[in-house]
Amino acid sequence: MKYELIQASKAYKDVIKNLMQFYIYDFSEFVQCDVEDDGLFRAYPYLDDYWNEVDYRFPYVIKQGDKYIGFVLVRSIESEERNYFSIAEFFIMKKYRKAGIGKAVAKQIFDMHKGHWEVYQLESNKPAQQFWNKVIHEYTQGNFTDRVEGGRRIQDFIS
Image 1: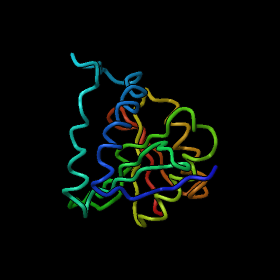
Image 2 (image 1 turned 90 degrees about the vertical axis):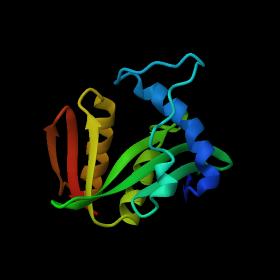
Image 3 (image 1 turned 180 degrees about the vertical axis):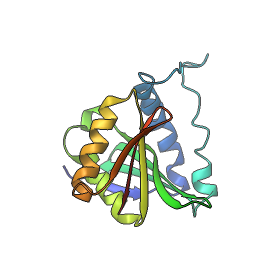
Image 4 (image 1 turned 45 degrees about the vertical axis):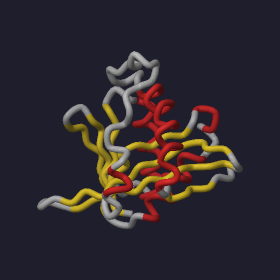
């Protein structure tokens, strides 16, 4: 289960852009999206922001040996009501799932970004809900809240 979590400099942007095609393909089971006329899914609209808003957006790539196996996009959200971190996107290629890598990466991300967290999944995405509930329950030893709001299941906790 060895892996490497790398904070992605701009040099990794194309890697994440390419992996995003597989992520969107997997995600298309839960949202309405199709490939464009060129046979690719539409580009992720916020990707450039991860290198332009460096105090609020944190991109990571995940490698196992010399192979890219996923990515994580973390956001820091500040409002008048509260400040918190959020997992914007989280992807492990299917071949590498169910080996504990996703859980280990998630816990490492929570440890790297200390503070309040809000992690959400679409209500229709039951596998993601099961994954995040299990990981967050384990990470917080059950000390989190879980609610459904606006078609999303949301977990709140402090890392």
